[in-house]
Amino acid sequence: MSSSLVWFRRDLRVHDHPALWQAMSEGTAFALFVLDSHLLGAPTTGPRRVRFLLESLRQLRERLGQLGVPLLVREGPPEHWVPEVARTLGVVAVHVTADFTPYSRRRDGRVARNLESAGVRFVRHHGALLAPWAWPKVAEAARLPSFTSFYRAVRSATVGHPLGPPPPQRTPGVPADPVPSPASFGADIRLPAGIEPGEMAARARLDRFASERLARYVEARNSLDVDATSGLSQDLHFGLLSPREVAVRCPSAPFVRQLWWREYAHFVLWHRPDLTTRPYRLEFERLPWRQDRASFERWRKGETGFPMVDAAMRELAATGRMPNRLRMLTASFLTKDLLVDWRWGMAHFLHELVDGDVANNTFGWQWAASLGVDAASPFRAFSPARHLERFDPHRDYVRRWLPELCDGSDAYPSPIVDHQEAARRARELWRAAAVGENAC
Ligand SMILES: Cc1cc2nc3c(=O)[nH]c(=O)nc-3n(C[C@H](O)[C@H](O)[C@H](O)COP(=O)(O)OP(=O)(O)OC[C@H]3O[C@@H](n4cnc5c(N)ncnc54)[C@H](O)[C@@H]3O)c2cc1C
Image (cartoon, rainbow, N blue to C red; front, side):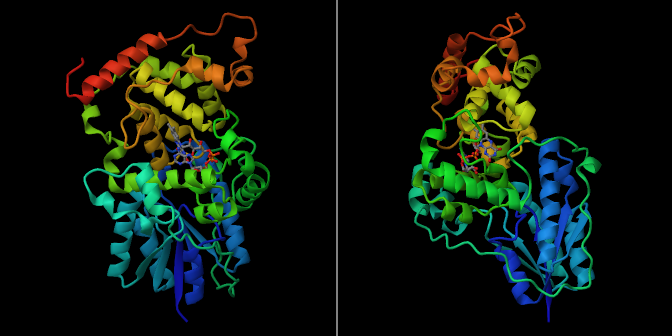
């Protein structure tokens, strides 16, 4: 009987895992995870995400062990380790869940070539997105479709039913490897309550959301409480849950629409991998970004003198989380009020967020800075004061994160800019860039 290898990446689960099913149905299956030095050593990979990954991996090792599948763990470049492990085990195929980011596509291309030259099949399965096979052909045109056109074209795609875990196999005589500790990667940092790593915890979050909070999702979407929405973004990022299972278990149109926004962000980056460094609307390449380290530091530390912005940035620093509404506000503030390069903010978010995800984060930043496809209006800078009035009328949120606002001291800084004036300047700069004038 033949054997094959499942190379796990951002699919750290045993439920609804077509690649694992296929490998186990073909004969004896082995599992591999490569601690990719390129990703783990990247400046945008923060310790919270590393910890979340390693602890989720430890749980995956146990879950796979219950299915009789030993998990091997290697550290270094996948293009070396995947063919090497395949050769040592004598497998005929390597199965993966297809990934769509620019780096993973390049990496998989290299691994596939190395495997194929050794006569081993490299087989990609779906499982990271809802229905990438339904992504409309129209994307091949020079301009990508708006979200609405994309959504219209894909929403009726047959997503199918989630699979349970495959039945166990007889354990092959290869022992599983230990998973390194977070401390050995400098990631000995506490994770916030409510986002425990691992597939079991993610499934419990999904159960709770589906039964207790889904019905109130529309009101919760703008809430400043990160626990009011599903809180599943890190689970989707690391593949502790499949988007298909989340969609089937939470069949409410406004919620599933958000999963399609996630799909759209991946679709956009798939077609335009350069968007991690360049605006989608190239006319905005001429915006005169300020390389202003001092303003960036005040934004990063939550010391701009705008309570709504500062509270959000302090929450991010303390927990690695931030509600969507405040991600939009803080990104708009950095780019439109402070005119600091959007790429600085994007890299900072990616480093700090537990759910940091190159597709969603790039999309979110290009959206908030009005640079992207289907983005916020270039003539709008979100108002921190209006956000405070509308979304935190009793100041519960800002008091939680800015104790100096209530302790009677004068420690809280005065505003870094005049928002009205900054918004007016931003409108003028974006307008000038859009029509090709030099506004410097
Ligand atoms: C500047 C900026 C940066 C962002 N960076 C990230 C990031 O690094 N990682 C990330 O997962 N999301 C990012 N988002 C999108 C969004 O803020 C988060 O997905 C959401 O806050 C996560 O909370 P939740 O799981 O409770 O979301 P819910 O509201 O419960 O939504 C369910 C799921 O839908 C997806 N989703 C929701 N909103 C969006 C959106 N606007 N774009 C794409 N997918 C969405 C997420 O996978 C989310 O888990 C960013 C948004 C902005 C404006």
